[in-house]
Image (cartoon, rainbow, N blue to C red):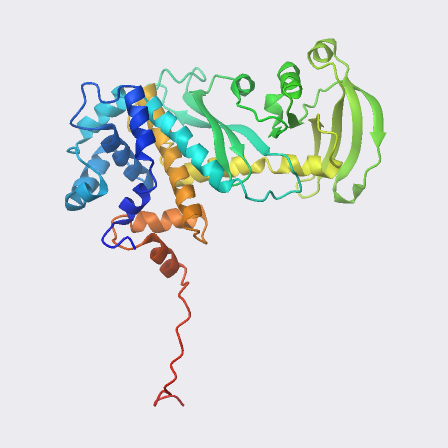
Length: 389
């Protein structure tokens, strides 16, 4: 199996070329650029992500050093840093965005049977953003503060398998709460968020969709208690209340009853207060739902540590968004590969194995088995060994 194919070529077998070509055609990616195709550009940037290349010169040098293998991998155009730079600047980043969303659909189907860490029948999503600092002189379009630039990656993460469902790239000056206006929510699903997303008018729209939310309350919340439910205080729970908002503006924005759950994190010795419209689960489950929100933080930490999204090969908005969407598609490809081949290693370990063996002509399954010393049991011969004691 995979005899004579490099690891890079085996990964690319999971790329749905038909959908990629549809995205290219949709945004006229080859208009006046035929010698260096969009797929060549994608392969260069995917290689850079998998091997963590530092610059366009680094990409050019490393790929050309393996030039005899490039044609069999899928490269057709000549690779030069100037051509790649022009492609990043001029080709519409939505080619790679649409392709990324198609990979998201594939990954969601593969991971839909994954178990949640908590007992919850509804679909569970976490919403958060991460900020990537940039140089103001090089990225003046990425507005943030007077002395610095930055961009935000807003992500809605499906917690069954840690697969991003929705991603939006904006200047860091865009407030997180505005992303609630464009979320592709699933009916009867549960969305967990931090208190930066508290906007009662938008939360009420989620409630009437209908969907559920679990969000951390702000410290200045004004409310009137309607009733209280008894709780077991051993695990950190302190109260479970039905409330209505007391502030006139807040009450007009969210006129219905909310559930307020107070919880003390015993490890960090911190009191947390959650607001939710989910009344059918125990109070401890509400706290556990919010705790699962940390998976999106781990997702951001993983892609920042293992993919190239903090330093960029171009300075225009198009080049930056292209690089980030290619990075996300690489993450999704590795996740799809792991699931399809049923590899018993983490994404982090799998990426390490791939990085060091990208041009090796061994099957990925064999490499994983060798790296984790998972050799099949050797059959015992019937013949006795003369030199056994």
